[in-house]
Image 1 (spheres, rainbow, N blue to C red):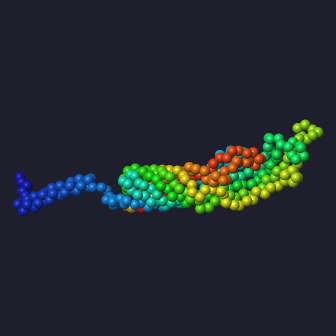
Image 2: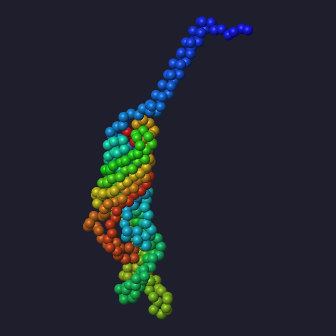
Length: 298
Protein backbone atom coordinates (compact mmCIF):
# COMPACT_ATOMS: atom_id res chain seq x y z
CA UNK A 1 0.00 0.00 0.00
CA UNK A 2 1.32 3.36 -1.08
CA UNK A 3 1.67 5.97 1.68
CA UNK A 4 1.09 9.67 1.22
CA UNK A 5 4.38 11.52 1.36
CA UNK A 6 5.09 15.24 1.37
CA UNK A 7 8.48 16.23 0.07
CA UNK A 8 10.52 18.66 2.21
CA UNK A 9 10.29 21.43 -0.38
CA UNK A 10 6.52 21.21 -0.54
CA UNK A 11 6.34 21.04 3.25
CA UNK A 12 8.33 24.27 3.47
CA UNK A 13 5.96 26.05 1.08
CA UNK A 14 2.97 24.73 3.01
CA UNK A 15 4.30 26.15 6.29
CA UNK A 16 4.93 29.56 4.69
CA UNK A 17 1.38 29.68 3.31
CA UNK A 18 -0.09 28.69 6.67
CA UNK A 19 1.91 31.40 8.43
CA UNK A 20 0.73 34.02 5.93
CA UNK A 21 -2.87 32.93 6.40
CA UNK A 22 -2.59 33.29 10.15
CA UNK A 23 -1.02 36.74 9.83
CA UNK A 24 -3.74 37.80 7.35
CA UNK A 25 -6.49 36.60 9.66
CA UNK A 26 -5.00 38.54 12.54
CA UNK A 27 -4.77 41.65 10.35
CA UNK A 28 -8.39 41.29 9.23
CA UNK A 29 -9.52 41.01 12.85
CA UNK A 30 -7.52 44.15 13.77
CA UNK A 31 -8.97 46.09 10.82
CA UNK A 32 -12.52 45.00 11.69
CA UNK A 33 -12.14 46.01 15.32
CA UNK A 34 -10.66 49.37 14.29
CA UNK A 35 -13.57 49.99 11.92
CA UNK A 36 -16.01 49.54 14.78
CA UNK A 37 -14.18 52.13 16.86
CA UNK A 38 -13.73 54.79 14.13
CA UNK A 39 -16.68 57.10 13.16
CA UNK A 40 -18.38 56.44 9.83
CA UNK A 41 -17.50 59.96 8.67
CA UNK A 42 -14.95 62.39 10.05
CA UNK A 43 -16.96 65.59 10.62
CA UNK A 44 -15.27 69.01 10.51
CA UNK A 45 -14.94 71.00 13.72
CA UNK A 46 -18.21 72.97 14.27
CA UNK A 47 -17.88 76.65 13.44
CA UNK A 48 -18.70 79.28 16.06
CA UNK A 49 -20.86 81.16 13.53
CA UNK A 50 -23.73 79.75 11.43
CA UNK A 51 -25.57 81.60 8.65
CA UNK A 52 -29.03 80.78 7.34
CA UNK A 53 -31.46 81.89 4.64
CA UNK A 54 -35.13 80.89 4.69
CA UNK A 55 -38.45 81.66 3.01
CA UNK A 56 -42.05 80.56 3.31
CA UNK A 57 -45.71 81.47 3.16
CA UNK A 58 -47.26 82.96 6.29
CA UNK A 59 -50.86 83.78 7.17
CA UNK A 60 -50.79 87.17 8.88
CA UNK A 61 -53.30 89.69 10.16
CA UNK A 62 -53.89 92.84 12.14
CA UNK A 63 -55.87 91.51 15.09
CA UNK A 64 -58.62 93.73 16.52
CA UNK A 65 -61.55 92.54 18.67
CA UNK A 66 -63.90 95.30 17.47
CA UNK A 67 -63.39 94.39 13.82
CA UNK A 68 -63.74 90.69 14.62
CA UNK A 69 -67.05 91.29 16.44
CA UNK A 70 -68.51 93.58 13.75
CA UNK A 71 -71.56 91.71 12.41
CA UNK A 72 -71.60 93.69 9.17
CA UNK A 73 -68.06 92.61 8.20
CA UNK A 74 -66.62 89.32 7.02
CA UNK A 75 -62.95 89.54 8.01
CA UNK A 76 -60.08 87.22 7.12
CA UNK A 77 -56.30 87.13 7.22
CA UNK A 78 -54.13 86.97 4.09
CA UNK A 79 -51.10 84.92 3.04
CA UNK A 80 -47.84 86.73 2.39
CA UNK A 81 -44.24 85.72 1.59
CA UNK A 82 -41.83 85.56 4.51
CA UNK A 83 -38.04 85.94 4.12
CA UNK A 84 -35.43 85.57 6.86
CA UNK A 85 -31.65 85.84 7.21
CA UNK A 86 -30.25 84.19 10.33
CA UNK A 87 -26.95 84.62 12.17
CA UNK A 88 -26.27 82.03 14.90
CA UNK A 89 -23.51 82.10 17.51
CA UNK A 90 -22.74 78.61 18.82
CA UNK A 91 -22.59 78.42 22.61
CA UNK A 92 -22.14 74.64 22.52
CA UNK A 93 -23.35 71.82 20.25
CA UNK A 94 -26.98 72.27 21.35
CA UNK A 95 -27.45 75.93 22.30
CA UNK A 96 -27.12 78.92 19.99
CA UNK A 97 -27.68 82.66 20.29
CA UNK A 98 -29.84 83.75 17.35
CA UNK A 99 -30.15 87.09 15.55
CA UNK A 100 -30.93 88.25 12.03
CA UNK A 101 -33.47 90.14 9.94
CA UNK A 102 -36.83 89.19 8.42
CA UNK A 103 -39.38 90.66 6.02
CA UNK A 104 -43.15 90.23 6.39
CA UNK A 105 -46.42 91.95 5.55
CA UNK A 106 -49.38 91.88 7.93
CA UNK A 107 -52.84 92.51 6.51
CA UNK A 108 -56.53 92.03 7.19
CA UNK A 109 -59.23 92.08 4.51
CA UNK A 110 -62.82 92.91 5.48
CA UNK A 111 -65.76 92.88 3.12
CA UNK A 112 -69.35 93.99 3.61
CA UNK A 113 -72.02 92.88 1.16
CA UNK A 114 -75.77 92.75 1.74
CA UNK A 115 -78.72 94.52 3.33
CA UNK A 116 -78.58 95.50 6.99
CA UNK A 117 -81.52 96.84 9.02
CA UNK A 118 -80.89 98.35 12.42
CA UNK A 119 -83.18 97.26 15.25
CA UNK A 120 -82.70 100.66 16.90
CA UNK A 121 -85.55 103.10 16.35
CA UNK A 122 -84.43 106.63 15.51
CA UNK A 123 -86.18 109.92 14.78
CA UNK A 124 -85.50 111.94 11.62
CA UNK A 125 -85.40 115.74 11.33
CA UNK A 126 -89.13 115.79 10.52
CA UNK A 127 -90.01 114.01 13.75
CA UNK A 128 -90.85 110.60 12.30
CA UNK A 129 -89.51 107.34 13.72
CA UNK A 130 -87.61 105.01 11.43
CA UNK A 131 -85.14 102.11 11.33
CA UNK A 132 -81.82 102.79 9.53
CA UNK A 133 -81.56 100.63 6.40
CA UNK A 134 -78.26 99.96 4.59
CA UNK A 135 -77.55 98.36 1.22
CA UNK A 136 -73.76 97.84 1.20
CA UNK A 137 -71.05 96.46 -1.06
CA UNK A 138 -67.49 97.44 -0.12
CA UNK A 139 -64.09 96.08 0.94
CA UNK A 140 -61.51 97.38 3.43
CA UNK A 141 -57.85 96.31 3.54
CA UNK A 142 -55.51 97.26 6.36
CA UNK A 143 -51.83 96.46 5.80
CA UNK A 144 -48.38 97.17 7.22
CA UNK A 145 -44.98 96.01 5.90
CA UNK A 146 -42.19 95.32 8.39
CA UNK A 147 -38.49 94.58 8.65
CA UNK A 148 -37.85 92.76 11.93
CA UNK A 149 -34.72 92.12 13.97
CA UNK A 150 -35.12 88.99 16.14
CA UNK A 151 -32.98 88.20 19.19
CA UNK A 152 -33.41 84.77 20.72
CA UNK A 153 -32.12 81.38 21.82
CA UNK A 154 -32.11 78.31 19.57
CA UNK A 155 -31.93 74.76 20.96
CA UNK A 156 -31.08 71.70 18.82
CA UNK A 157 -31.11 68.01 19.72
CA UNK A 158 -28.25 65.62 18.94
CA UNK A 159 -24.93 66.56 17.38
CA UNK A 160 -23.91 68.69 14.36
CA UNK A 161 -23.98 66.78 11.10
CA UNK A 162 -27.01 64.70 12.14
CA UNK A 163 -30.76 65.06 11.68
CA UNK A 164 -31.88 67.28 14.57
CA UNK A 165 -35.00 68.73 16.14
CA UNK A 166 -34.92 72.48 16.71
CA UNK A 167 -36.74 75.01 18.87
CA UNK A 168 -36.21 78.77 18.84
CA UNK A 169 -37.87 81.60 20.75
CA UNK A 170 -37.21 85.25 21.46
CA UNK A 171 -38.25 88.87 21.01
CA UNK A 172 -38.17 90.81 17.76
CA UNK A 173 -38.32 94.52 17.05
CA UNK A 174 -40.37 95.22 13.92
CA UNK A 175 -39.74 98.42 11.99
CA UNK A 176 -42.75 99.59 9.94
CA UNK A 177 -41.48 100.54 6.47
CA UNK A 178 -44.94 101.16 4.94
CA UNK A 179 -48.63 101.06 5.83
CA UNK A 180 -51.85 101.24 3.86
CA UNK A 181 -55.59 101.67 4.43
CA UNK A 182 -57.66 101.02 1.32
CA UNK A 183 -61.45 101.06 0.84
CA UNK A 184 -63.36 100.24 -2.34
CA UNK A 185 -67.11 100.19 -2.93
CA UNK A 186 -70.17 101.98 -1.64
CA UNK A 187 -73.18 101.78 0.65
CA UNK A 188 -76.66 103.28 0.35
CA UNK A 189 -78.42 104.60 3.43
CA UNK A 190 -82.22 104.53 3.55
CA UNK A 191 -85.01 104.86 6.11
CA UNK A 192 -87.57 102.17 6.94
CA UNK A 193 -90.80 103.69 8.34
CA UNK A 194 -93.97 102.21 9.73
CA UNK A 195 -97.00 102.89 7.53
CA UNK A 196 -99.31 105.26 9.47
CA UNK A 197 -102.43 103.63 8.02
CA UNK A 198 -101.63 99.91 8.07
CA UNK A 199 -100.17 97.70 10.79
CA UNK A 200 -97.04 95.69 9.97
CA UNK A 201 -96.58 97.62 6.72
CA UNK A 202 -93.38 99.59 6.15
CA UNK A 203 -92.36 102.34 3.79
CA UNK A 204 -88.77 102.57 2.53
CA UNK A 205 -87.57 106.08 1.82
CA UNK A 206 -84.39 106.65 -0.23
CA UNK A 207 -82.51 109.36 -2.14
CA UNK A 208 -83.52 112.16 0.21
CA UNK A 209 -80.33 114.20 0.85
CA UNK A 210 -81.77 116.35 3.65
CA UNK A 211 -82.46 113.15 5.62
CA UNK A 212 -79.03 111.79 4.73
CA UNK A 213 -80.56 109.08 2.53
CA UNK A 214 -78.60 108.22 -0.57
CA UNK A 215 -75.50 106.57 -2.01
CA UNK A 216 -72.14 106.96 -0.25
CA UNK A 217 -68.81 106.18 -1.88
CA UNK A 218 -66.33 104.20 0.22
CA UNK A 219 -63.34 104.71 -2.09
CA UNK A 220 -60.31 105.72 -0.06
CA UNK A 221 -56.59 105.01 -0.38
CA UNK A 222 -54.32 106.35 2.34
CA UNK A 223 -51.77 105.26 4.94
CA UNK A 224 -52.73 103.35 8.07
CA UNK A 225 -51.91 105.06 11.34
CA UNK A 226 -49.26 102.85 12.97
CA UNK A 227 -46.29 103.20 15.30
CA UNK A 228 -42.87 103.11 13.63
CA UNK A 229 -41.44 100.38 15.91
CA UNK A 230 -43.39 97.38 17.22
CA UNK A 231 -42.39 94.64 19.66
CA UNK A 232 -43.33 90.97 19.08
CA UNK A 233 -42.72 87.55 20.63
CA UNK A 234 -41.85 84.74 18.23
CA UNK A 235 -41.34 80.99 18.40
CA UNK A 236 -40.48 78.33 15.81
CA UNK A 237 -40.10 74.54 15.92
CA UNK A 238 -39.01 72.08 13.27
CA UNK A 239 -36.33 69.73 11.97
CA UNK A 240 -32.98 70.11 10.18
CA UNK A 241 -30.98 67.56 8.20
CA UNK A 242 -27.45 67.63 6.73
CA UNK A 243 -26.91 67.67 2.96
CA UNK A 244 -23.11 68.04 3.20
CA UNK A 245 -20.39 68.35 5.82
CA UNK A 246 -21.10 72.08 6.28
CA UNK A 247 -24.71 72.51 5.09
CA UNK A 248 -28.14 71.73 6.56
CA UNK A 249 -31.65 72.22 5.24
CA UNK A 250 -34.48 72.98 7.66
CA UNK A 251 -38.27 73.03 7.84
CA UNK A 252 -40.14 74.71 10.68
CA UNK A 253 -43.43 76.08 11.85
CA UNK A 254 -43.32 79.80 12.67
CA UNK A 255 -45.51 81.91 14.98
CA UNK A 256 -45.30 85.57 16.02
CA UNK A 257 -47.61 87.51 18.35
CA UNK A 258 -47.61 91.27 18.86
CA UNK A 259 -46.93 92.48 22.40
CA UNK A 260 -48.42 95.94 22.06
CA UNK A 261 -50.88 98.15 20.23
CA UNK A 262 -49.80 99.25 16.75
CA UNK A 263 -52.01 102.37 16.86
CA UNK A 264 -50.48 105.63 18.14
CA UNK A 265 -52.22 107.09 21.19
CA UNK A 266 -53.60 110.11 19.31
CA UNK A 267 -55.52 107.78 16.95
CA UNK A 268 -57.01 105.54 19.63
CA UNK A 269 -60.71 106.32 19.26
CA UNK A 270 -64.01 104.52 19.75
CA UNK A 271 -64.99 102.08 17.00
CA UNK A 272 -68.15 102.79 14.99
CA UNK A 273 -69.67 100.20 12.65
CA UNK A 274 -71.68 100.69 9.45
CA UNK A 275 -74.97 101.25 11.29
CA UNK A 276 -73.53 103.84 13.64
CA UNK A 277 -73.16 101.61 16.69
CA UNK A 278 -70.20 102.65 18.83
CA UNK A 279 -67.87 100.46 20.94
CA UNK A 280 -64.99 101.29 23.26
CA UNK A 281 -61.55 101.40 21.72
CA UNK A 282 -59.65 98.09 21.58
CA UNK A 283 -56.01 97.66 20.62
CA UNK A 284 -54.76 96.26 17.31
CA UNK A 285 -51.90 93.75 17.43
CA UNK A 286 -49.87 91.70 14.97
CA UNK A 287 -50.29 87.96 14.42
CA UNK A 288 -48.66 85.58 11.93
CA UNK A 289 -48.29 81.81 11.53
CA UNK A 290 -46.90 79.64 8.74
CA UNK A 291 -44.29 77.24 7.38
CA UNK A 292 -40.69 78.22 6.57
CA UNK A 293 -37.92 76.26 4.79
CA UNK A 294 -34.29 77.21 4.35
CA UNK A 295 -30.61 76.38 4.22
CA UNK A 296 -28.04 76.75 7.00
CA UNK A 297 -24.25 77.04 6.56
CA UNK A 298 -22.40 75.86 9.66
